[in-house]
Length: 207
Ligand SMILES: N[C@@H](CCC(=O)N[C@@H](CS)C(=O)NCC(=O)O)C(=O)O
Image (cartoon, rainbow, N blue to C red; front, side):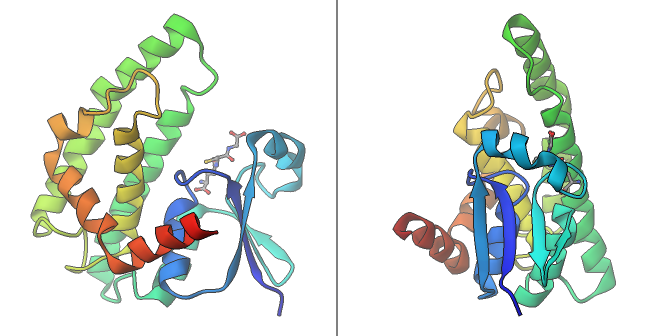
């Protein structure tokens, strides 16, 4: 059987990062195929839906990051067995998919147009989703989003909040989460301190 291959941009974020972390926690052997943005332009049409991440298993190529997170999350013990808890996990993951969809719409804009779009994104869309996630976390007990333990929903939120706080998106204030949803900052720190997560990043630094 050929090795599993996950293809995505060479960034420690975005849609593939929760999948990479889940596979690492689950001890799943995979090729972490990282591509440059310029490389994607050449390979775009060879992917099933002209997008990444893609997952190659036994010679077939699959799509949809949340499906991948769930598949490997189940193998890694990071997905609830109880269907109601699974629903809670899924709701958060799909909300994050909305966020990425809205974010991507601002890519490629320039100058004042970019500034206006990003300020609107921060003030309206991100603020709405941050408050929503904060409320969900609170309702789930304040530590994890589902099942009272680390799941792939926590990994996906962690990756987003870390990205927001890094200031990588021009015109989105890095302290937005601190102001709007402070519990998510504590959540990010909680997830970052998980042994499986620290081990994953230690491996990345060593490679
Ligand atoms: N629903 C898909 C969305 C995939 C997607 O849109 N990926 C972005 C990168 S994060 C992409 O490849 N976009 C291609 C493009 O913008 O042309 C998933 O979750 O995997």
